[in-house]
Image (tube, rainbow, N blue to C red):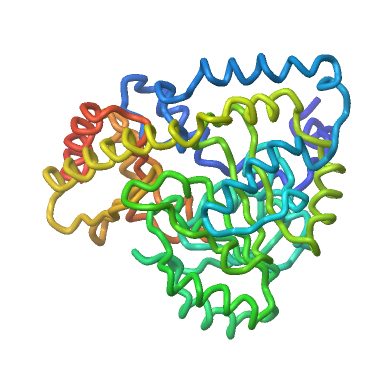
Length: 398
């Protein structure tokens, strides 16, 4: 069979898979294989040495005490005691949420996809931060949304610029997706004044806010920041246990509102019926009387690692290089002077023993290539210190 005939005989796949094929991860994984000793700063996961394996094992054993019932179909919303625990935790951040409005999901990533399914028709406009979480961009593009970026600075999303963008759009956006607290990828936090202004603007202009808050509990300096959901009950809030317990659990949630909850429940049920029941119970039992102390301990570990990275950057970086100073979360954002290209630099950086994520992948139009995301949570201080020296060598070699 000729190549043309083979192509014609191949199954016709949907154009909606194209955003998932266009990913940075195959490239990054190839680089990891090329230099397995390179210090990897690309991920967004807690290190294995802070994952409470024994506690999660205990939670799983408690879950099995429910017997064969946990192997049957269950309620689409998920395990009610876990939803009640989530509601109580959200109240500590100022959001008064009815457990009936909470839907357990397969991580916050499924929550992003459900939001797109609930709100987006092909050609609709979705606003995102620029830069933003790259895997959210892939989801929105797979639903054939037009993604429009709103710039972010050290105080978070620039609401005044958003207002100008809204005036120029041909139609009202369906929603704005934001990570306002310890933002991915920059690590910055939206100021209280901007949060209030954003909520007011959304109500005035008639678009929904989707608040993704995976890092909100990981505050290094003072109390956790109140959520956007605490300012407006109509905010669609996405949460997860991936960053505070373990990502492999795949347990997250959507906290919507009475007028939206049935839409989310129906789409979730049509997607996968409900979450796996053993793990949701395991998370509930593992969290009881443990989670707050565990989070406090991991905050201290991450704070020390952030400090090591900031000290290394201050010591090693040449003039003209700038970086953010996050007060929590996993990431900081390094920006190089005019003329640098962090996509082009990554291969040499890998050879020198450091892997980062280039900035272009975090923009809807991939228009910015002078920055990089570094994850300080996943490496011990001594490796971070050495890696900052290698990064400086990479920059100097350009």
